[in-house]
Length: 345
Ligand code: NAP
Image (tube, rainbow, N blue to C red; front, side, top):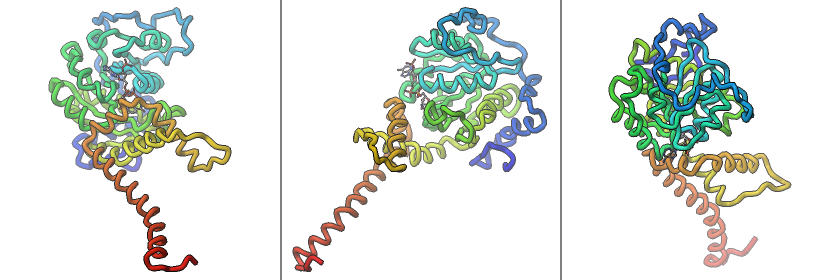
């Protein structure tokens, strides 16, 4: 797929032909609104009781520091975010930049934050579902996701809703969603491989992993899925289609190791010095980035990735090996002097 920024690692994916659609469309129609005629014309939010007034209609932005996002276009998706913490808020920005509407719900009350940003906040998942989002995006912590997903009243959603997640592990949410969701719902598991720190200057070139776990080849589901993925493609992400198993294998050896090293370094309480090398600056940065994520997130990377234990063991062995190389060399010199009476040069 040389001409597409999406990169697939499973060539046999049944949906690979669908994956190229936005790129082809973009080549021919610079405006992605080309999908507009394909989209369902009935919008469920007209039947939905919102718990809070629609911020698009709210005039009083006096207390807000940040302006509204762009108004959603006719072809805009309505993305309902479940779990509106650090990452949920961060990803909402990109969704809005691409002209889509964001709805949100969370354990905590983010209504004030949302009101300033043109986001509808719902106090319960049920109210959010009744508002009829096109895509329901799970952004809860890895540890809480099972309870959060089990509490979603799926019967209140439109039957063509696409369910997506952004968890930093992938086999767990895929299996959970397949187990819990009624078969009519499409499922796409994703992992934006960046966050509020690494993506603060834009998402261009940053990897976005996705697996279309269950998306009907034709009809609204396929269109919604492409529209949803196009958000990240149009933000400049490097799109990588990959199975959830493969993701977890790679992520344990890269992301989990990175977080673990960052966590270990944070225990050393490293400080900046007047003679920092470039390498040391990198370590300080790594430490800062790592601890800006919650410990729940890090524990989730460990507990919910079957490959993580092996990586911890590898790390342990590698550290022992390095110590052996250091101390072993000195021991050999000393032994030669003490036992073999080799004189000190
Ligand atoms: P997190 O600590 O992993 O998750 C915080 C979110 O989980 C908040 O929305 C929080 O809700 C919710 N939550 C936590 N415990 C809960 C509970 N017992 N019941 C209900 N909700 C609960 O931090 P995060 O950085 O925001 O990550 C969110 C998701 O994005 C995770 O699955 C993570 O793997 C994924 N992700 C994160 C990054 C990143 O760089 N941070 C990058 C890619 C993917 P309240 O805020 O309402 O309390």
